[in-house]
Image (cartoon, rainbow, N blue to C red):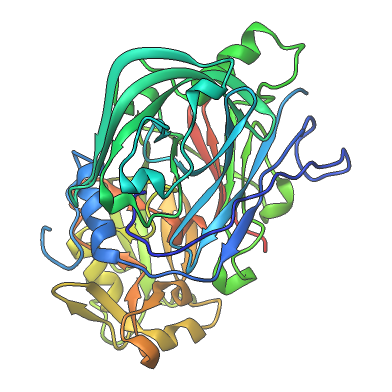
Amino acid sequence: MKLTLLLSLALATTTTFSNASPFDEGVIGAVPLILNPDYVHNTPAHIQKLNKRYPNIKIKAGGGLIPVGTGKVGLVNVNPDLEYYGAVKVGTPAQTLKLIFDTGSSDIWFPSTSCSTPACKAHTRFNPSKSSTYKKNNRPWKIAYGDGSFANGHLASEIVNIGGVQVRQTVGLAKNVSDKFKDSPEDGIFGLGFNTLSSVKGVNTFMDNAIETFAKNKTKGGVLKQPVVSVFLPSLRKNGGRNGHVLFGGIDHSRYTGQLHYVPVTQKGFWQVKLDAFKSPSHPTANTTSNAAHAGNKSGWIEHATPKQEAILDTGTTLIILSTTAAKQIHSSIPGATLDPKLGYLVPCSLRNSPSSSSIGFKLNRKYFKVPLADLAFEAVDGEKKKTCLSGVQGGQEGLWILGDVFIKNNYCVFDHSPSNPRVGLAPLKY
């Protein structure tokens, strides 16, 4: 519901893995991502929602300031890698809802049968009267987005099950949802940020409760083996956008190359980390005097130091969003890149044919992680011509930068919720 979409998607299914698996010991369930081939994208609406969703982050497209438990949830890929959602079971007996797994927020919310707006009727609505474990909470709840869309209702307590990992959880039940959500493919949002981002003060996140449940009773199933959420977002370009997943309580070692490199969280709320530098391609049009460290650099990269910059890793944001200056530095190195005052940065769609060695990179805790130039040609904006594409990197973000799905679908991410040492593990994805 973060994006304005016109599409219909199939529900994700649940898969059970045998003991002979690349996962950490104790895996009990999984939810896979499935590709949806039909989709109409509205990038301006997406950017507008981000403006409201992050009250302390101002974003504009363009160049102005503008062994017990592991649960694996498969993801539905909204073509073309626009967003990802999976199946979540709520209540007893379970009712299945399609939710976006969002590391950039902390609420879990979806519509209830008390909502009769057209947007609610177009989605699966949770029916409290059919659940024996439902407990009402009279506290009001609401959320709003930058394009004017909104949802509100009340809190409730329910059993939430993710691929076999289940806890009693406070959720937001929407009884009023704006019409702008009518065509969104997902039913709601599953927040994976820290509890300081929760809309209602004092509400613990799903991970808070799962970790606490495991600590109290390590002998029963249905709780986490490790305090981690591991994310594999698939790429339409690389593997047809299939087989992605979110893994609760474990790590799929078959999905990355090399070793996980851990980056400490600098501030709990978003998954906020320090960004040491970024690299753009070396090209004659580039400003090679600006923090350049590429003399004799066979990789053809120009390094731009960012000693005071921080960024968030956000599965709920489609693109990479940087400062005006950083976006300009990257696109000045790409032949044919232009800045449209309404759409933002555009690049030739032929960039999709770039060799795998051509990339940009982001340095986190002294190590670079790459994003191929091919993924900067995100989506054609000229219809059937398909010569001009929206760039996967946009500017206008002068505060925290956002490393969204364009970054994450190239790098396996382990979000470690360890209370004393929250961190993000990163490694190049293996397709």
